[in-house]
Length: 202
Image (cartoon, rainbow, N blue to C red; front, side):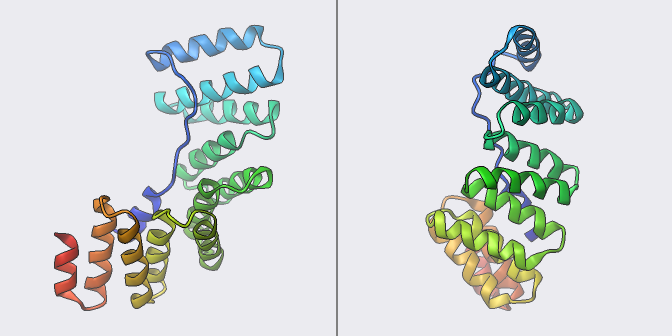
């Protein structure tokens, strides 16, 4: 449950205005790329094309479009983020982490740091994951996600009291999220507090 909740905290950024269907988006972007000459226009079209291909279920085509996007505009952190997530979903944790790091070289954002933490955590680099999540807390103190991920990480390491504290903080920051309450209940149960777990699950 902890790993599933951690993975769920990854964030997919889609800043484009899409047509009515993804097939229309692919057609529109393909036609646009035949005429586009400005690098910014090419990057925008490739980004929209990539997102449409993700939703259509064509990851290889999406990956190619994301890479074309950052080739046209190396400062497109949204493309680095989405490419990293695409690779993360293929369980290619090293490649995913590399793309998140490339985005972070352009700009440090909570999403890129959080997703880098997820990638390196799944690759077994727990200390680096912890540093990523702690950095997210520094730059986005009201974000519940890094606390939830730190709680899951603490549970993996057998640090049950720390896990409870992290999950409790996550619930405090976002009490409307049922996943966070479930994670807190899970951590309390693992720590031997069955009554507290029941209250959290409720």
